[in-house]
Length: 351
Image 1 (cartoon, rainbow, N blue to C red):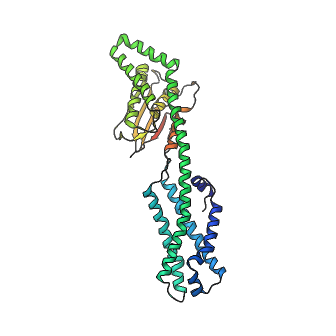
Image 2 (spheres, one colour; image 1 turned 180 degrees about the vertical axis):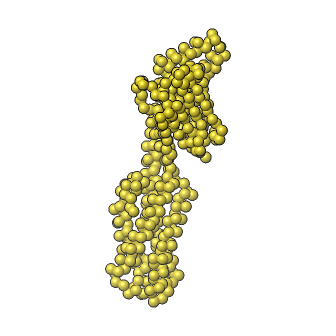
Image 3 (cartoon, rainbow, N blue to C red; image 1 turned 90 degrees about the vertical axis):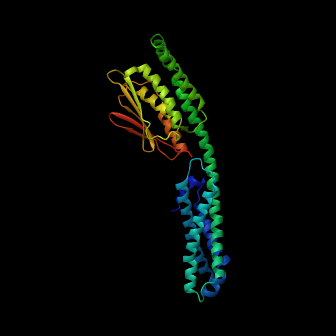
């Protein structure tokens, strides 16, 4: 119930000892602060029994609110958490609502049934105010600790995200300034100039578009699908000029909302991986598919792995997964069968 490990992740510290201390302090203090007259007059109970009643009440109401806190935070948690007034007021209504209802059944009803007189309005108000005050102090401390920890976590993740974005950018730039890439690009361009000058010009435009896009998005955490598709189309255009009919691709855009986002350079990194790790020949053409699937964007290719592949840094796919983990609670799915390799990128709606 106390979920020590989970609470440490939310709060940044182990909370069990704090919880026990609070239950003891409130358990011993509540009967005398808010119920002293009622206990002395109606129950004629000694101090020990009064404290026992207070401890039971304090434990139930405290642990109940702690579980509400845990449920709310784990279900509304965002990676870059911020204090939102509406959200805080909504959460407070849950805490106080639970406290008032439980107070009625644990204190008001038993006292009314067992006591010599029906509980008065004044005693009812005093009980409710006291319970809400104690809970507000306790939960207020938890909320403050949660948001402080979330802020600290946010700073760390922002820095990590910057590193991941730079790594993805550097990975693509490294691939595109390697001698073999430049040689292939220039060789393709040289062969186009005498045969089709217009196509050669288009090739240069696509090449410059890819480089410009890579350089311009370095500080962006997410990118509109429309922008990412525009870049990958330019990149695929260059690859198809180079490989001819040995490389085929299809981009299905029906059903896409172009203002939705994905992580930048994810499509291009996946296309690069497909080209890098698979045979591309007239006997074994490579086919790449980019298409929406429910709330995801899939990149799939027929699987025909090369026997020997140049040493990989592992940045590509791992980098994409890492950035999604930092930004969202959504998972990048990788599906591999005997004949096909598919990566499913979650689509992120940005409001």
